[in-house]
Image (cartoon, rainbow, N blue to C red; front, side):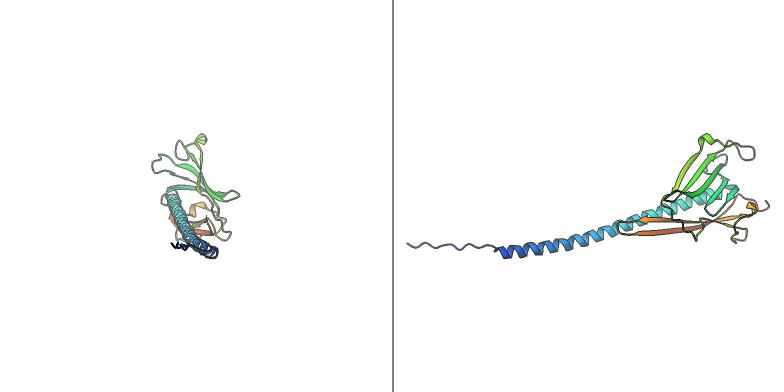
Length: 200
């Protein structure tokens, strides 16, 4: 009676090593492609969100500027005025926009009033500081606020007569910090001061 020895089939150590190495290489390639695509997607989402916030901030500033009744300080990066800060306000507020901080941000100090000038008084207990734009990019060659006369021509600093200001160009920029890059997004708008009389 004969017994047949069954041959055992399997992978050799070399074959297993090759398979593991190829699997590792494939996993690295797949991870790299996926990770790059995912980071690019996150970057685009962050970029889009930051630009949307910048646009909304610009529109909000434009709304406040259109309600300006009088300007008291007009510098390149500092603007103080009386304006209707909210559409529902009965009286104007005393508003100051300025750039400050070690990591610059655009702020607005708002102090409501109990009446319009010259009779109204500042309600300093109700003053509030708003952060308008964080990570504000302040280019030394670009003015945050540029002031225009009735013809739309820029008025050089210093401005002797603040009543000649009939429009304001606002230049806003933010720094976007992404997963793999830093970028700058900018937005400029020009606002006509509706509530300022041309004969002042």
